[in-house]
Length: 335
Image 1: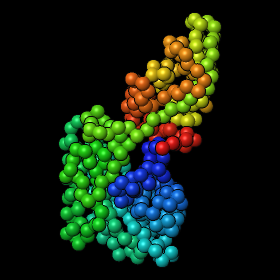
Image 2 (image 1 turned 45 degrees about the horizontal axis):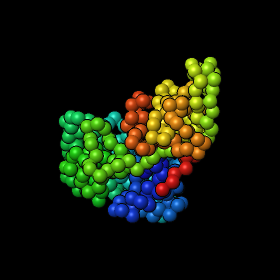
Image 3 (image 1 turned 135 degrees about the vertical axis):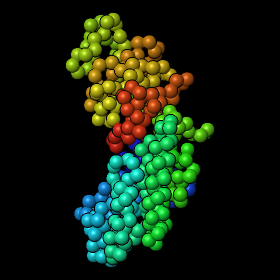
Image 4 (image 1 turned 30 degrees about the vertical axis):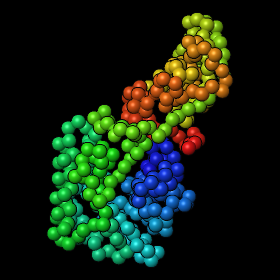
């Protein structure tokens, strides 16, 4: 549910997932976790990212599980738990080859030995994260998994086991059943989005999100008319322009590259001129009878055509994760 459930709306997605078999929620920050709690989500919530010491008490007061990979943080979480007479549940993060948050494999056993007896600290889980589980070649990912298993074996030798062990993201869930352990972290695939071209989704999956708006104005401009800021687009002949009330403040990117088109009446209407903060202009001269109030689809299907998050990602030079996560909170989510 990170980043407002990848732009889909965390509250709605949380309730839907929990009502259909999920038992745990994963978020990026304490603030995201608290928002879920404040809106009635009572399932366990794991903060997968960094939690500063000053937020430890807020996390514990909201019964939030924290990621741990640092001795100072362990002591801070322990102090907060002792002060509040609560238990700080933590999952230890192991960096098996991502180069991001986490302890290196050789650091894990000494770390656990230092913190295992801290008061108020419950070592509830341990996890790692795969960097290229969505790549064509799984050799590196299998190496990460092997290093993770070695860590688990060394911990077992000192008598340390965990209720929750997890490392499989969407791509690994689909491709590496041996990486499932007793918990998996379903992200992108839950929204019907493909982790990569090498990881097709099972039959029956489809995108959960459609982004659409309505046309606010239609006008005919004479030849030689400029459109939008910077005068970067000039009509060569009489041209019908429609204005849609979506701009870069909604996550409809302006630069360095932008959306190329939207769907109107089942046909592609190219973006013309610069995308503005709250509005964008499209050319609809080739589409008959476009009217104010007509639907314009930014991501999704209309008629026989479809603009997917993957296609938009190609336009923008990024990944589908970023495309949907960039849709900002002021865009209403309707189920």
